[in-house]
Image 1 (cartoon, rainbow, N blue to C red):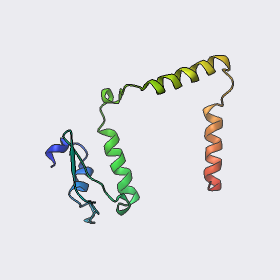
Image 2: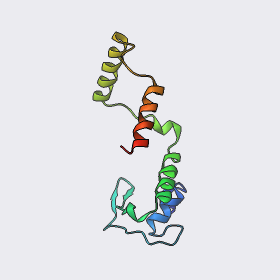
Image 3: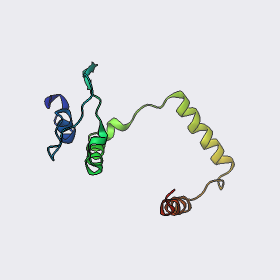
Length: 113
């Protein structure tokens, strides 16, 4: 099973075996489905600590090679991007700067929204 992961995602390998670094048992749901060489297993991620979930997300993200991130857009996505670009050309000042948006988000976070 570890070889199937190709040495990537060491934390995921621990998860697949049901044990995380602290020795906690991970609740693994039902069976493993095999589809196109991939194994799909459902996990109860709530059994992981927040730190373990963040580490898992980081490991997964870092396992994606830069060239693998170039996924083709669907026709709907292309149409939406074209629509937004056209809207931007007609009204270039219609949006807000990142600084304004970030400040608003931080204010909401501080208020607990």
